[in-house]
Image 1 (spheres, helix red, strand yellow):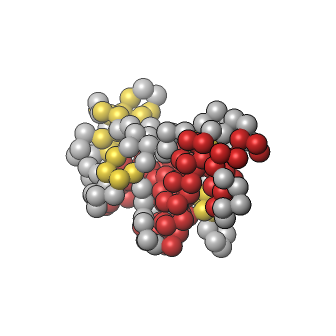
Image 2 (cartoon, rainbow, N blue to C red; image 1 turned 90 degrees about the vertical axis):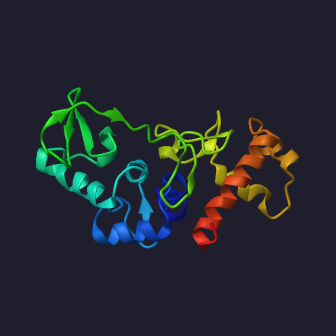
Length: 204
């Protein structure tokens, strides 16, 4: 499960947006709890919302998500592929695009929005590449539940960052503990961890 600050960095949603959407029901995290925890699917869905918000109003996004169960799309929103023509939102249904906003239930052709690529939100926030938030850090839903890891390993970015955080272990010495982790990967892990920490404290 992902803490809110990591979900924020990977999705592009601010901590304030996450809290508001939990309260209003746009996206209630599967993990719940206090502190709140998001599932990998939650983070993918949040990123989808943020990507759609670069072209469309939050009102349209809310309407699209609210119409999913109306048309029997009852799985987690992350299970579906959404598209937009910059006027409405559609969901891919058996190789056809169904409109969820302007003409709910009708089928048409749309361009798929690639939400995993880097993008800039309406507020100007730069959102990291979801699959590779740093050059040597990858996100794979099939590895450690989607937790960001050092590329080519099952070692979490936070494990490496914590190892060198207090200065007792130099970046060059990390390979003695994790032979597959390069000095460059250590730098990426520390850099990414700093962003996540800053997001938690509200300074990012």
